[in-house]
Image: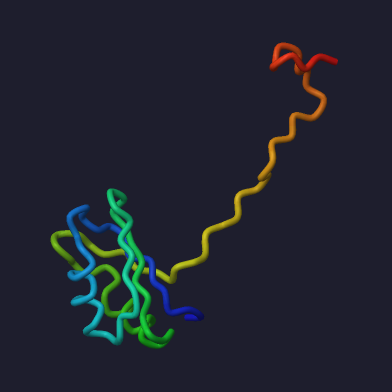
Length: 100
């Protein structure tokens, strides 16, 4: 494992940071927890990649509050392509007085 940040999925919406901290602390030092509200997943950052790997190996697929956890290495979000809108040569008549 390259990084120390883990994706934690299949969480109940009622899970709070303290619950995840207690669960993951059994496998190393927890640096940060970020649960995405209303989405059923979050991220846990461990102190080292080795601790993250140990936590993932120990907890992936285990039951947590009635659900099987899905744990994997977190990856940075992908950059969105096409940041600007390109209208090419489309006809723009009727768009705020811009006519060709």
